[in-house]
Image 1 (cartoon, rainbow, N blue to C red):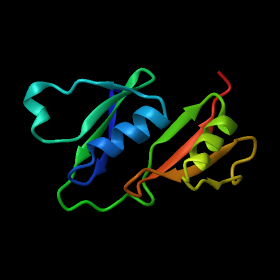
Image 2 (image 1 turned 90 degrees about the vertical axis):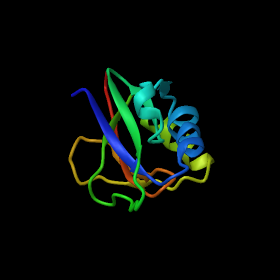
Image 3 (image 1 turned 90 degrees about the horizontal axis):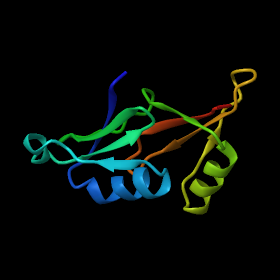
Length: 116
């Protein structure tokens, strides 16, 4: 996979930088000049990229979602909760630790414990 994209509303950039950059610790990468006028921003997520793309008639994704592999799942959950971001446990898969949260615009995100 090269990249994945999450939709967000117009004017999302500051919240994206705070959530995906500051809270989740992803590095922002420069968008190509020809695409900057569209809004949004891009981040590095492991070897792939996460693109936050502006959608004029935005509706949050409540079922479809990316799953992020996390080395210290408990630490991330505490960091999210400390910032008032609600997390929801999911123990439906045996031997898999994971939880869900929402980004600033209500998109569903999954966080899965990585043993790497």
